[in-house]
Image (tube, rainbow, N blue to C red; front, side, top):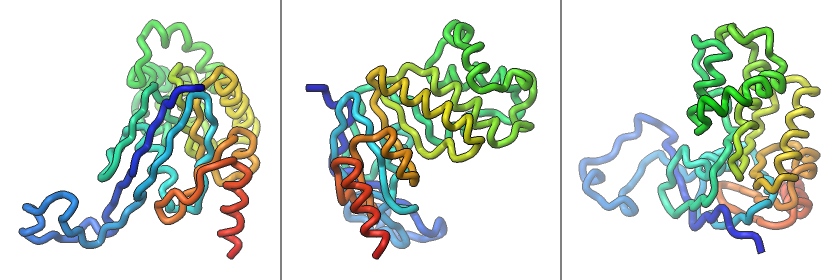
Length: 245
């Protein structure tokens, strides 16, 4: 049996609705769990599940139900207020993938910078640089400042860098919604290659066809709670039934 690569136990995270909400002086000395928190809401609450190596999981739910937040917690870019997330393998996050790029640096410099931030050595980037640029189809813009690229071109180069990472877990959060259909299909074929190589996939999308293409298991989130965890077809059926009401 494949080992667990992700374990989520009673996970919860909350955010403020109003950044100006005030707390009393008494709240400052209250315990974390007992402290009153005006104007806050739980984006996720009491979420528990495990993921085995090689699973392909689709995260399903309406907008604002905690799907992207869940991926950020697994990627450990945000920390929970309750519960625990244990990730036993490295993560390649295709989440807001253009966020680490620097506007005033060239495409070439950004490739080295972003790949380095994700753990690749300069020699590894040197070896894979031509493949990164060829996949992105952006060779004519190597010395162009990143800020002058279109949104589609930014996604191209960002995906190309992240897709070169050898991390066992891939997190994909609808980052390919921007860009042309041909390049999106090229990226999807790359994701399929990674899955064939035994990678583990977390995939957030509102596109049922894409979810069926990649995923065998579905996590259905509603109002920050995990309401279903099972086969992707059943997860999609329950979601469609709820949204039709």
